[in-house]
Image 1 (cartoon, rainbow, N blue to C red):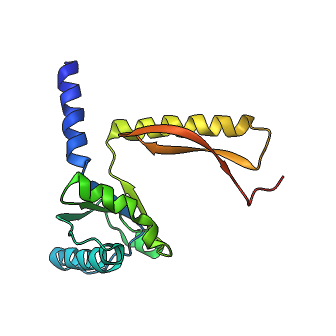
Image 2 (tube, helix red, strand yellow):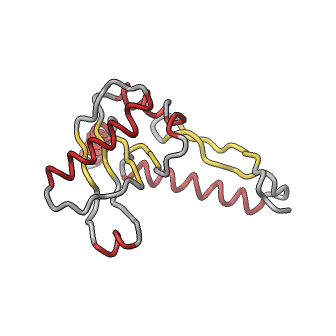
Image 3 (cartoon, rainbow, N blue to C red):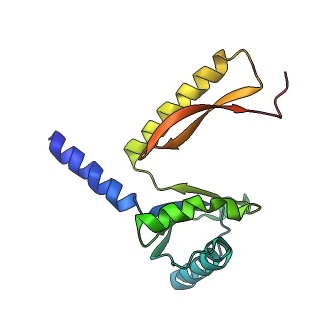
Length: 162
């Protein structure tokens, strides 16, 4: 039984290894799914990929979740799940994220359920360390990725009040 569970986790990791998640991209109110995908693809290529200098194009683009009028009125949009050509393209993409400064979007790796739980545990560790920290000009932050290793790093916070 454990072998099946481990195999499923490995398969899920392989499935998500080429994907990124983009949060905060405005969603069109168009009802035609092909037109929606075209607009999302155009946005990703023109606003994200071209400024980064990447020549590869997304293989698949998918909106995650259910769109409702309530979400639109509060300017909360469904995230975009973007499948790239390979893990190498994804790594290059993530390395070049600093070229997108000024855009009000958040880009993260597509993580499996187990990886998200691991990130949550590390965030809880950082939170506990921050609560016990005497010097409030520094904060503990989680760095790294569940796939390449995670660690806590002490970061200077210039906007903290003493």
